Length: 532
Image (cartoon, rainbow, N blue to C red; front, side, top):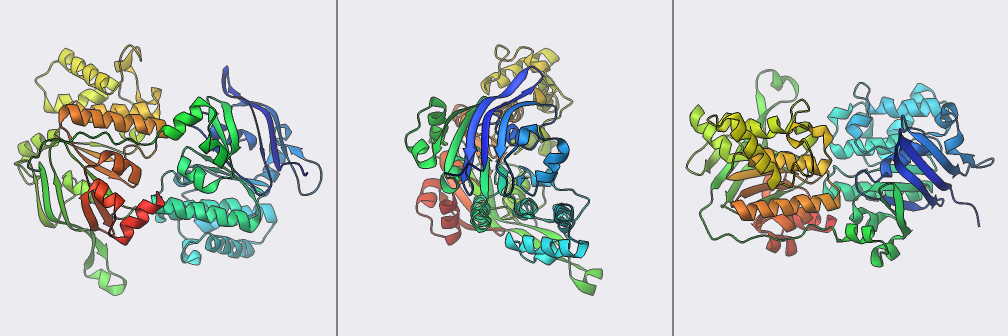
């Protein structure tokens, strides 16, 4: 039998005195798809970066033998930086997790792909450009010649991910490392990207190491799986065997970490938020000379009817561009609407400044990425207490501090677990803990309605389950209403009493959540459910 394409033996990575990968072993056969699975902090990404010599500041030891087309195998960990540069892109390539930060904002997509071809294959500028356009076409991007001249910010999330794949595959590497390539994408786009990777893998005969925490992706894509916990591979084998008969407790925990539906059924009540025929549009320039004299309108939300009663959750599901976030902004009073009517309790956003301020206390929001929505210069006491200073100015510093500590305790953050809790900063917490802080910031002013914008999309499966369970408990205890915006059908099924499905600014289906998701009537709803 021929040797594996890549043999990793006793791979260790340390930063100072802290060991993050503690002696792992795995093989990748030529043409094989291996999934490296685990939660954030398990060592998945730094393993891939270590193999490529990209883990800056890390002390790396062990052996990683890469079989070459010609000549003896090369130990990646023993090569110089110059030797590794010769292999990166041509023999082994990587798709990074967040294309918006991995792509250069100052150069067009085509220029970035062409640069790789010029450096690695010695093509002329015109040859490299033509090859870049062809590679973009192979990834399924519409109008590849035009998109090649676009910059990263001019592409959608799915298009940026396809551009990253095109760049990684430009020189036809034999091994592709894909680091969470679908994490931030809608369910249908996830399926498309996964299908694309599978097609390209077969077309080029390359091996793929998929780094992910999404077990559904592993089931659909990989041949083998290696499960990492705290820098160790605790279990590995064929996907079917490991998933059907997991041997390690951590593997069983990951497989059991699906969102659980544990909703309370509040007594019937009149909706606190009511919107009828809500319409939101934006001005857009008309093409050609007509744009000099007038602008057109892009309708982002068309005739939406929304009703949320106390203690209940309305889930809004749809792909990027469907109008979910625009609808939420209109309901939050942050985006003007030009049609329909909207009432929140007995008030509306059309009142005077005092009425709007009172309404702001009753409607709070939890954003998708707590790391960017929490000020890095403020302590937890300042972050969570900010709402109290604005809406309850009669409280003194000690009273605010007590309410902040009590609210943080409600979301599972206590002084006993985190000494000096109130004086800590957001960067000192994990992703799931930061999301709890964001929930506490919204919760501290005792709102009636909380808008949850993709609250768990960037979290690991076990942390996602914990956050959803927390939200369910808070709803039952406080009678909160939730507007839950997500593209994850499983989260909707676990959290929502009612669901609204949006596509291209229109509500295509709505009703009781379980009824809609288990017996979808609209083709688009069926597609979303099947893509999960």
